[in-house]
Length: 248
Ligand code: 6GU
Image (cartoon, rainbow, N blue to C red; front, side):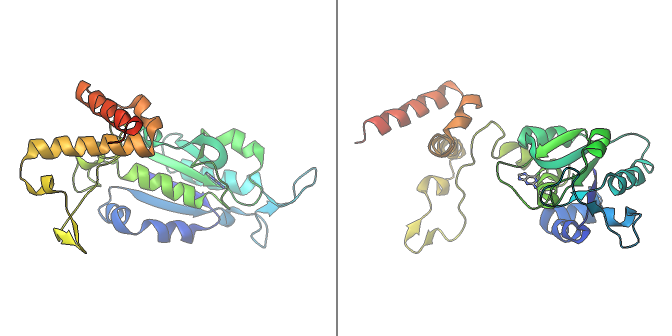
């Protein structure tokens, strides 16, 4: 998986990605990240890449030339036209299914805007996907690009230690994760649930499933609509609803 990031703040990308699991994936050549400074493609002698908006108004707009030329510098090294993701609060909201879809690509270009945005003409020419990471406004697209690269990288085969862990955790069957515990067995008077110390794997699995169901019911009930639930799961959820209506 090769990520190409068009940005005015390449250090932000470089420093952010060279850590933890994505840092190790880079070292092992499972992913690559190329941050391209669009300022290097300015034709202005001061390296300027923005200008006042036509029609007036606050802020500055990134000019089409530097964006197009930096994009072309990537495409000429590839033998095809990669997907180009423009990070914008006006885009489709990123989620796990989108991460899975993007993880099948060989190259992804992220275009990071700043200020009041980018000249619409170059967006019309090169952008294939408009993506937001949620309903709030950030100062630029770098953090959203890093969020997407992190979520996509961990789906690339070999990036996680355990190939199964990407599959089995939160969102896999649309339930939240069960709680985890490690040593010590007693911490400040609080004990680890006894069932986890029992060694009975069948009971542990059922307990974890019920914890996932309970958490999802309490914290993200909307996710139960699309969850994959067994008859046993549905009976357990019914018992939670009864308990809520009828405590004791
Ligand atoms: Cl992708 N960009 C910016 N600037 N703000 C955002 C966003 C993206 N997603 C949520 N807020």
